[in-house]
Length: 358
Image 1 (cartoon, rainbow, N blue to C red):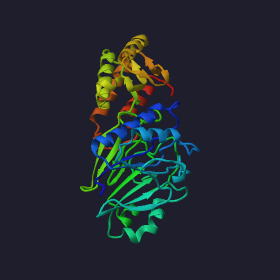
Image 2: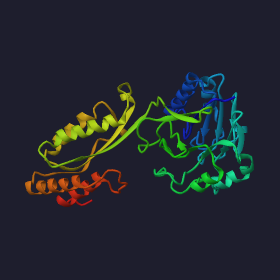
Image 3: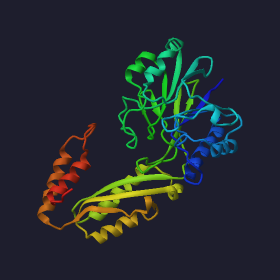
């Protein structure tokens, strides 16, 4: 009887030479599965960045890192949709390239839905409706949750095998776990583990995988010891005499929000953009910013972007800015899903006050 299941997705393995950090992240998940007593690891699509003829490097990692009593189930995603059982070898390794229903224990079933082009998840679930009716079951698939509050991956435009609220109401799974969106998130009973290693600068912060206790029906997240962490920050400087002090405070607040342990500083790559209007001269801003980010590596070796930053000590415009900020502070921003947000409104106001063209 399976009690603990780990779920990851969107590993996007290429080769050890090209992206060794992605293999290291998966190796860490295997290691933690052993430590946590996980019996089944599920990869919910896009284990590979593309369908390949040779998966030998993954097979070597699997053999060296997998705990002896761990079973691994892989479903293809939209990137490795041609993956099938005959193309890959490993002990206790299963690949479901077609929709498949399996028992987890005496009381629960799991339905695996690999990615299928030009098909919805509702259409893929329908043939199993009678088997699932009145049962307690989990859904594991790869695609878009149409009710998600978070945007889809900007690098993959369009809809990928969507799951709708109507599908949830009709078939009534207990828990849904999906691959495809690289941000770890939850929306109701739908979970995305996210990518365990970032693929691009849009995938920031700590990376995770999920652990499902099938007895309790509870899901917890575990931190992946990813050897690569991306941070992407955009700071706004205001035209006040203590602008550099405020900039440092803002950066310190952002850094706390990263919630990244100090012993992982060397794994961080940061991209930083500075905009707004500075009272201090640009060289002082440049020196301050470089001092703030000194402990971290730069993303793609790119220096902080000060292209949209202007310098001015115009007291009249500074007073207009202060009055506008007071007005913004009086507005009710709490609980509002506004686009643009308060910071974006202030940035655009500074452009107009200081006559900066976009």
